[in-house]
Image (cartoon, rainbow, N blue to C red; front, side, top):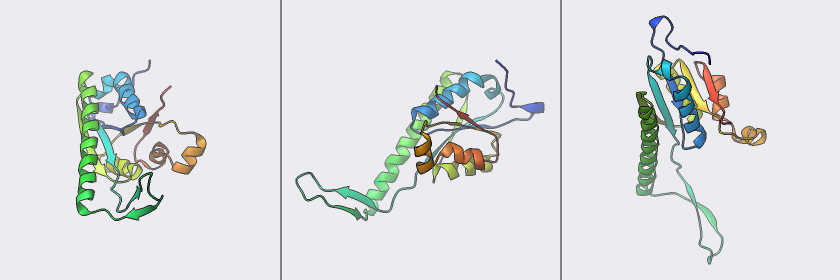
Length: 170
């Protein structure tokens, strides 16, 4: 297998792996650790996860015995704070899991999270941190779903200010 060297001329190159809760992003992380471990010992690895912003309105459904009414309800500040807190706990737990995977393979990693739309948050982090290589997992959407829902990896390939490697799970 060809060796990928990220530190040209002794310069340190930063690599960022963007993850979410999907198995595809963890596959991408383990792929990086298996295939770029030599280079990662010489350069920093950043694990990034975007947190979706909380909604200002939620839709609640009535119970089965009641009339079927769906209506948007403005949540209380307490509810909003609870959602944000739980989302933050989940994000930190997923980042810690990724960091443990890296540590078990002898790679030190930094973790970072930001609130925002994942595709723009990832591209903003790439620019802010001067990342030299962005790595993402492909979620495995079909062509139709990708066209309707959009693709974070496709957006990053088009808009990130560095090379992007999209790892496809076999």
